[in-house]
Image (cartoon, rainbow, N blue to C red):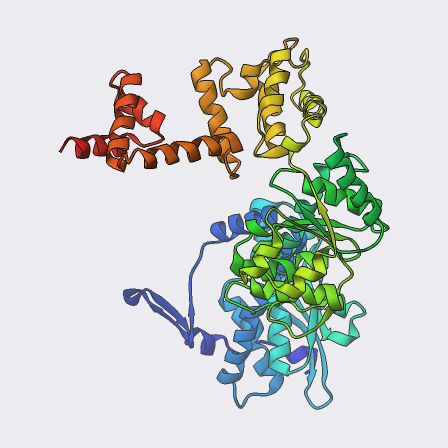
Length: 565
Ligand SMILES: [Zn+2]
């Protein structure tokens, strides 16, 4: 088409396709339902998108919005002009832009030869709504601002011609130029066409967020352990011999199994294995298998491919892939689901895994340190743990002693935690009183080192600067309780350790039960007597008596009523 006859066909034929149907709350442009929306709202929305996503992402976002609309209009243009000359028919797109009130388009050049697959176009944009948005809320940009219009032009031209067409806005009033002008060519004729086409690809933020979230979680874990070589504090023989085993095995690449009660510091020791091995510069990833729901454990550990199950909207690496070239610590390994156990065995045997919903095999190089607080052999007998996996991870087993078997280490550890928490809470205390130390010594520590750590932390919080840490501040909640309640707090500590009560308590209950049976005392009589005593001790206060018996108030009231009938 020569430039002189480059004029729009009469726009009337398009205007006639526009139908307002307010009774039904609809506006139609041919077969497209369309909406009228004020520029003010669009302007605020754009500002918000830029604030939320940043300029680059926002640009892609609006270009794609224009792109979708351009695609549909190309379809419309072809339908409306089945017999017209291709050039004339093409101009429907720019006319639709005018009709939609987005911009006035002045054609400057159009060379479209379908046979030769040649395309060149130049348009001037007058009064672009996107320049108006800049004026209203964004201010002058450092780059062309007509994103939606440009996305529209690219999609419309590509879908209309069947060629891959890209436009560039070579001048834009949004960046301070006199005019907005665009140039369109076959994509390959633009040197930066590949980079430009990325703008039309979805770039799900969610993937990036997931990846960042995982990386932060790993970093946070590492920050909790600032020492290069995680300190293993203790001189008690059962502990030092365990430590020797760990240090010897650290560099041997062998799969290690740490067995110990909860709170015995297995993760610190696993980190020590990692830092003493040749993998120390690689990642250390800790996973508590009991903390992840069984239905998610497989995808969490081994990754997931997009579409593997409802909710798997994107592919994700699992912990094993993230631990590549490093060490993974699997705490509570007995909690793994049967499928996860099978996959773990494969990682150990073949050094490979498949993501959930994927059939691609991926190689991973990960050293495994597993841990458990229950006897794995029992779990095998009970059919909860694969025997073949058990033999694989049980090859190098280290038993971590509970704190009650390391009496001499209690003071050492308490001092260690005192220093740590004085630093954290910016306090200087005068240390533990003798009574406090004795109480620390006497306690049974069912929650082990973690319980000791929490106890010392509480003590630091409750102790004023330049004061000594007392027994009360360690073992009571307010530092100001009667010794009776103090005992109760200890009891709570004991029961929250989720371990069996102290052995002396068990012996007492056993012998008591034996005597009750020997004297043929019924449960009812026993209950009645217990309730009476509790009520006496609490001077008739039901709530207080219920607390003594470990019951709720309504539960005790019900029992009292029942025993009276
Ligand atoms: Zn512009």
